[in-house]
Length: 78
Image 1 (tube, rainbow, N blue to C red):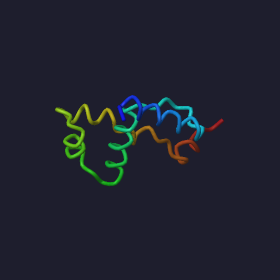
Image 2: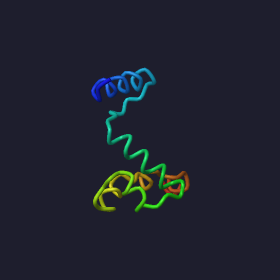
Image 3: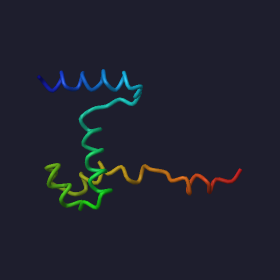
Image 4: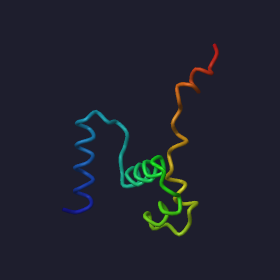
């Protein structure tokens, strides 16, 4: 199976699951790095696993700051 075949399979399964977000290899990389860091992993180890030269590059894949908590939403006063 080629990489293209695997990606097409993922796209079909995502569509069947109702996931409208476009997925690619960087989606999986970002998810893996984010979950690893959420579970107490170290940025330097994530950098090594991702084979990045710089931890700054690895930090670009860290999506922990993208999450908005309910506490933050409740601060909105209309």
